[in-house]
Length: 401
Image 1 (spheres, helix red, strand yellow):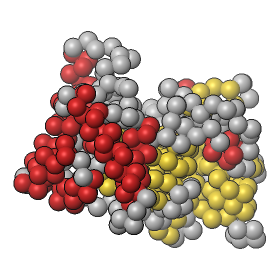
Image 2 (tube, one colour):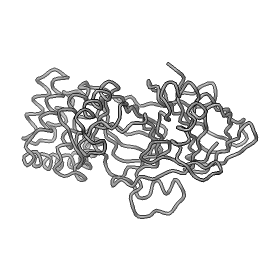
Image 3 (cartoon, rainbow, N blue to C red):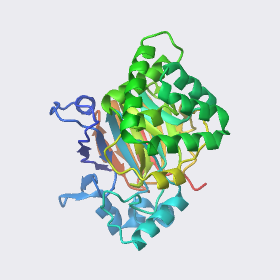
Image 4 (cartoon, rainbow, N blue to C red):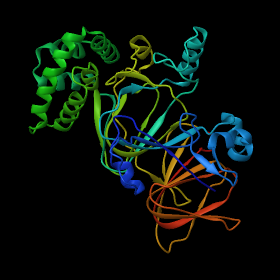
């Protein structure tokens, strides 16, 4: 077992208080958006096995099978296949989508062939991997996820009473689902910026009014109005109105697969994802938006967001099931006096305590106690039990599907 020393990422949209409160540290006054736990080269966790702190990725690269186990190393190579984060949003994140494996590999190869520097601001593909992800709420958590049915969105736009939105509402009624969603998103992102900024301003004022009414979609209007306050005039505000508004309660989660447009708006959660940097943005950001590539990757289909709740497994864990090979998120409710939970040792794992205290014990008698916000890395094959009083999240690699 290795206690992790982790890095906080100070993105501008981050909360100044949520992560410090969980960690029990004083706020700095600066945004603290994400706490990364894993071996991503941009901000790797560090461990100390007696020779001083080293990046977790270096430890794994030196002995992939010893750290990851032969099965995980054989499937994913000498890298930890997932990244775990605490995510604390005070302002909306960019509206974005992630490619599937084939799109990522092809896009990366094409940009490599053109000689686009990997750190270039206009580069779309930083690696050859997909980036499915799961967000699990620790507090009430607001987000946007997937396209709403076009007819329902047309009604939502019509209720705003903004004349310049009427052609979009008519389009959504007139065209088949996939074509309607594609054509509206294309039109919004390609519109003349001054005219679109005026439309966004008018829509934002109307959304504020409806948010304060008894309209059945007032929570969604409140979310869109908040987005517009943070990104005045941004076409992404109208693009966001195509998406379902979702509010997660603590313990609930959302899985986001390839091609599904989404944005996180507000709240504290645990995010787990495949270890990739591939993001295509649709708006709500000053960063590069590649409209043609975005339209190639987005899946233009209406979906109802499926809120995940954990399911108990025979080992006493509460598991958030997803269809991906890179990660599995589970939760242990630790109660004083209960039998210790024996953790599956077939895969590398990261353990994060979010409430109370968790005591980890190895079969060799070693012990490690985690307080709120503290985490540990456990290499594959190391047999560990967990007990205590509180809540412990476990990130691991699922068995081969």
